[in-house]
Length: 159
Length: 176
Image 1 (spheres, rainbow over the protein chains, first blue to last red):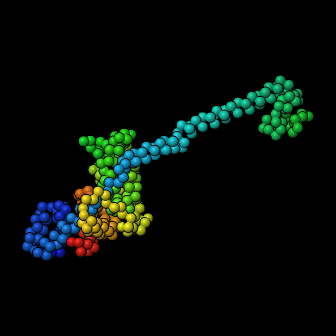
Image 2 (spheres, rainbow over the protein chains, first blue to last red; image 1 turned 90 degrees about the horizontal axis):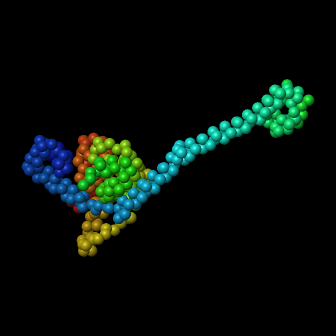
Image 3 (cartoon, each protein chain N blue to C red; image 1 turned 90 degrees about the vertical axis):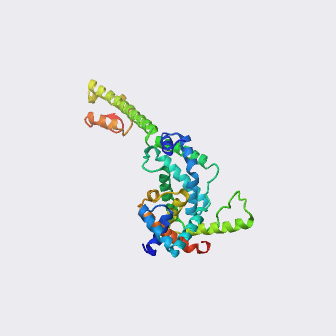
């Protein structure tokens, strides 16, 4: 081994990361070479300086604060999940569905009433009672107009 | 004493006492390394805190393929690099005073001057060299462990440390 190779390996020697054969070769060279021995001393001094760097604990209540923040964030995530895809969303979907069914049934009962009236007395005899119960321009009016053969006009009168 | 792996498992199951114990065990090395990397005590605590929270978040998916501290320092490394890329390196002006110091004023002044010079020299290293030096000196990690923390090979760590020492010796000539 020459000095250049050895100098590259001195730090690794101090770190205890050389394999046994390489360590023996480097040490043998250092014992015989004052320049490389001086270099090794310098690296040992550097390690001592680095070893004297002060440690920092952080605040005394660091662990407690981290825990509190974790618990707080866990709650926020829990509420967020409820809002974004959980129980509340499912509840809203059920309510919407129920409302849809209810409106559908209500509209259906009005139309059925009109159907019954027509079946019993024919479109000509469609009473103004049924028409009076339907709001102007509503789908029910359009439907009644259709089943009465287009004789009914807006305004609720049958001609 | 309960091992880190077991504490991690318990934390993953929602045991916050286990999580707090894990934080207590590793907070000094987490804060110290982030501090010496970033040069800012407040940011260092923020990074350490963020690292522990990320670890807790992933605790139920944690697989102990490496030592817990290696995993922790890998998270810290990524957080530090993110911050470091966003800011210019700071000077030592804002460093906190050392507490509970029983040395004489002259010794304190001399030691603080040396310590400040070493801290500054470390902080001037390129980020990967700096983290390799810090992990080795604060954690006593092997090249293999440093490699896992920095997502590189052990031979790359060897070369990082050779270059780091060369840089440090150039900057600290007067102190060696």
